[in-house]
Amino acid sequence: MRTLSPLKTVLLTLLVVMALAITWRAVGEYRLIERMWFNWQVFWQSSDAQALGLDDYEVVIEARAIEGLADNVSALSFDPDRKTLFTVTNKDPELVELSLEGHILRRIPLTGFGDAEAVEYISPGIYVISDEYQQRLIKVHVDDDTLFLDSADAEQLTLGMGAGGNSGFEGLAYDNRGKRLFVAKERKPVQILEVRGFPNLDASAPSPLEVTSSKRRDAGLFVRDLSSLQFDERSGHLLALSDESRQILELDTEGRPVGNVSLSKGSMGLSKSVPQAEGIAMGDDETLYLVSEPNLFYVFKKQ
Image 1 (cartoon, rainbow, N blue to C red):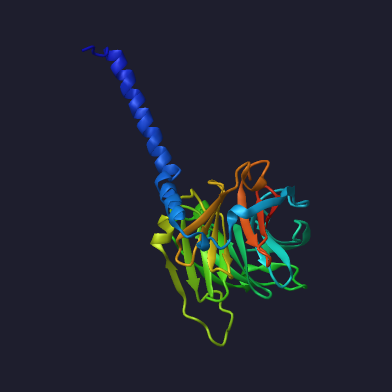
Image 2 (image 1 turned 180 degrees about the vertical axis):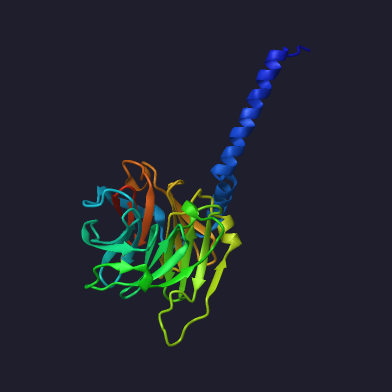
């Protein structure tokens, strides 16, 4: 039996160690085990559970630059009353109203909002904006006459969840029937919180504050980060957007995975991959709207 020379033994050992290191990094960083489990659950779900049918969407507006915004576009929310979209910028922070074609309708300067990363429509004229660094949720009122917003004048909720900085609150979604606000924690760990009692919409009857999470649901999120959320009132399903994994995930009412779609080139008719998806919103007719840094606008419709 031939034996390897000492040099070959060392080289073989190094190759094995490198292979193990690469595999370990892939399993940890790209969450391969979670992804395999997610796909396994999706495979065994009834097709009826996939209420939104993400695979049926095709891009109709792709990577349209939002003229007037150079960069740092983050988050997206559909206003069913105004039939417009709202986004925020986190450098020289502003609340920006967009048409459904991605054109700027107005810009509202934000004072004292820190790193504004998400905005969510709650009810007519009422929105919540998140401050990622300080992990604050800030309730604001906006009407046709609003010229600026100052956080000092607003109702606020601070949630210290361990990791600050760029690992804070990246996405918001609101369940109007259940009166709960979903909050996406970007990473360390990837997590979806449910907040009840904020924002308070009836000053005469305040609701007790309750913050919960689902370990089962969070464990099934194979994505490397969360950048935005969207709640669908019709099905009760939640969409979770990940920019680093270039994925949109669909979770049912129990938090179980029932579908996903890629934001990479070739998927949904995309000619190029979405570079850095930061916000997702759904219109009354189930049209999906998406923004990507630096200032790109997308529209997807069911075909």
